[in-house]
Amino acid sequence: MLKPGRYSITSRSKKNMLLPNSNCAVDHKDPGVSGMAVHIEEIRSKDIRTIVVDDSPAALRAMCSVVARQPELRFVGAASNGKEALALARIFQPELILLDLEMPVMDGIEATDCIRRDCPTARVVIVTVHNSQELQKRCYERGASAFISKDALKDELPGVVLKLFGNGACARKD
Image 1 (spheres, rainbow, N blue to C red):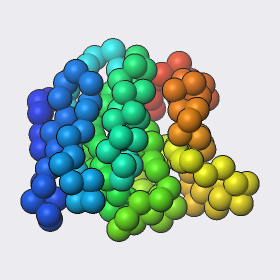
Image 2: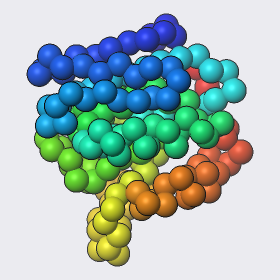
Image 3: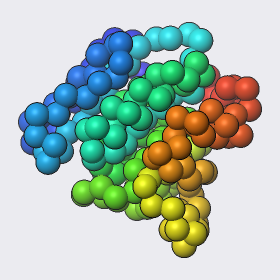
Image 4: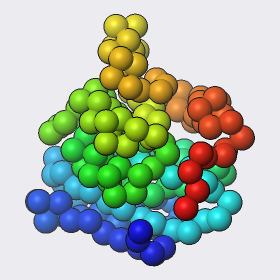
């Protein structure tokens, strides 16, 4: 297990992002370049290790900001596509993954399937602008635990976390 501190994982493109402690902001000079970032910080009051995944730097910043405001969530990493999300999930074994649907390299549906296979205790919450019943059905069939509109993330995430984890307690503690 990695020690608490700051980590930066460099993608094949040799671009990397390091997320500062304060606001989980992502600085992406070229939004089209794939990158992966990880920030680990020991916060004892937060149990639910959380990864956020979105190919849009603005959406990723917004998701990180929402996660940072949830007392029961501990932000451990961010990725810009499903393949990077799977790599982070294998390393950090998060309890919660907030995952966009439309991304390059590996989309959210395929990523959900792979993440649930490799990290069966992780709960995947799809966060997207699309809201069709058919799309939701496909996500749930692949193992998604919940489906939230990006516009409603700030308002709906606390209820989803409560539904999935009870009072913020996780089955596994490190």
